Length: 219
Ligand SMILES: [Zn+2]
Image 1: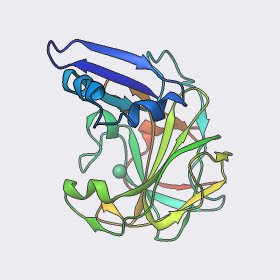
Image 2: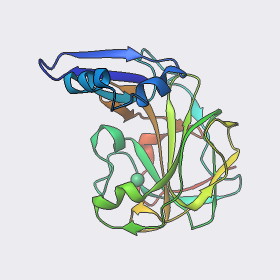
Image 3: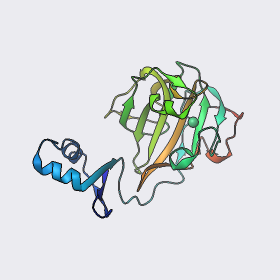
């Protein structure tokens, strides 16, 4: 995790890499303390996942399709899709058609860094984005993968778990900003303003070639 520290008085910005154990220290600044009040008045702290500065990642990594062997799925929306796949965070992500309750698997070995599974709401406008349940995995080259719209209480893993590629990690659902049940999947790198989605190779297919209506099966 790293923190972006903005000096409110002159907009100077600093980046500090934190060790995992320090994360707690920053987040638990007691606001009632006079000193930390002063700090918070002068500085704005924004925490981001990952390492900063971010150097390089494995651009040739072949991700696994995020569902079970033998499963077939239709692409609902590919990269730069005009329904919701725009902006740095979402542009290079893929929507796979999946029914509620179908099994989602890890696209790569990793560590579970975030699980949100309490929501049970869905809607067709962007304001429902925050109601999407999801799992985020952290990978060895400092990238992350995210699996969104999970069923309520549909995570099969918890924060801190190590997972292997193709291991079941969640049940697909119908939560958040979406019109049909599906899995929204993306891989991300840390940037100065948070995570940004990146193009990947998945099951030996370049992600950018996957288009709405394509049917893909996992062998
Ligand atoms: Zn999507």
